Image 1 (spheres, rainbow, N blue to C red):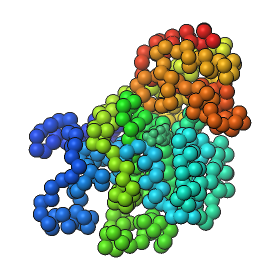
Image 2: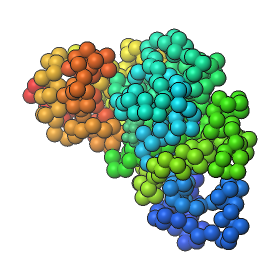
Image 3: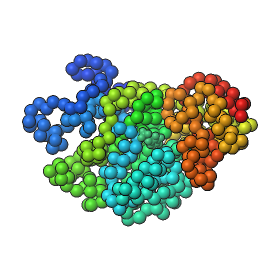
Image 4: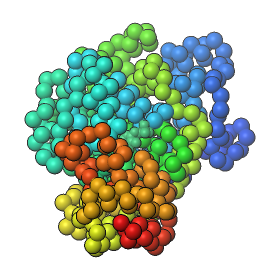
Length: 428
Ligand SMILES: *Cc1c(COP(=O)(O)O)cnc(C)c1O
């Protein structure tokens, strides 16, 4: 809602961070497809390299097209600054690279995107970073997992794959008590449906690949700094609180205050690890964000109607969608996602594994693939695809039992979405 001074969300989705190009007057944000930028003179170059002045050096570290995307997403989330990177996984990786030292721990919800479960549980072993799993259905598991090595807590706002809604405020309390930042992956909700900083999150990450870009055409990610966390505790977060050897002893949290985390992710993480976003993808994602409010409302409205339809179908055993009356996450959805519970949810078929395989084979307009957050309606049967390698018991724990089907409901006409499911269910 807008008051007299602050523009509303739809206005910001179109305008935040962008102006007509000062040299050409171009109204859309240009794609600055260049690797590097000419210095005014030697002093200018020295001040850019020493972080005494902000400006462009080299596209691995920053680019004007990416900068518009950063400012837009920071504004929409209500953060102090953001960093655009090559993918959602790159965003998660740079966040943890900035926060953790070898031997450190962080706590993560079990209810996560499968790729994040692999990243945290497998790849991070090589860095000496240890994940402890907790369960959003029992908040005490987060509290019990805290130790003196804990450096962060990580959850998703709307969690994959079942569309569960995380009690962000309750977990933020635990993070505050432990004096560690709460990181929220807001990919499935986007800032249109959920504003994690308003509920106590300190850092937000996005896979812009999904709903921010929204059209299934570009991989990208973002880190947003809430500016809320105090990094000054000596030695706890050395990247922020210790003198930086590569910047003549600068202490980042002292120099950059409430956007020091975003700066650290850029000037240490992105600079040294290198997962930069291409300016072309930044342009595609920016264009997507202009229609974010329209799309997210339509995604959510369509998903609710499809969930109701499936709930009444005699071949469907159960439907798990937080927007449905009677769903166990309905109250949390009303608190955290009042405009809608998003596009993604799961349901179970009475016919089990074979019925799941038949359904994904019978759909015509739905695309059978492993993605979410496209304009198009998407369907997957996790037990025969993404979760195929797990035992039956592991599949069930992960919310991917043999009978489970996941939808990412698109923004086509509702009648056509339902008609496609209807004909495919009839043929099981
Ligand atoms: C897809 C996804 C990611 C990973 O993002 P990529 O852009 O594919 O690297 C992380 N979190 C969530 C919730 C996702 O859906």
